[in-house]
Length: 101
Image 1 (cartoon, rainbow, N blue to C red):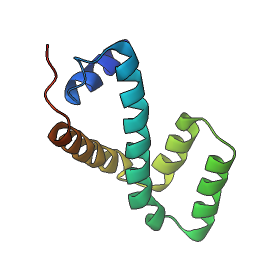
Image 2: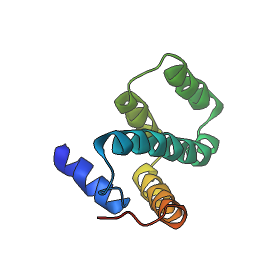
Image 3: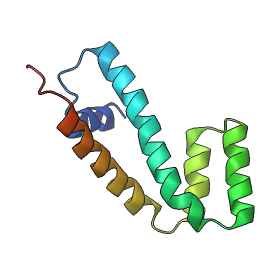
Image 4: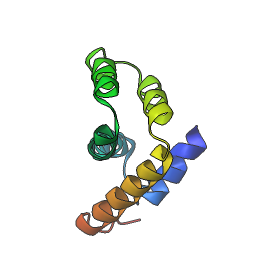
């Protein structure tokens, strides 16, 4: 898991941040990623599936449960997540000044 975190911080260009800055940035980026993915996948769900998804969110279900639910109903979920992560990464790099090493 630590290796995944290191890969993500490098991919996003965050490897020069302090641990506190990194933690805050990752939380914000996770929220942005989830919002972007949600905007794309919710219209693909039936009304019943949308209700079940909203119930998961309303009950603060663990992220793993939300992902499992979406993955079972959206065949190309991983592709959507990858595309949105790349968009987020590109946008983040465009608006963030280069970090001094």
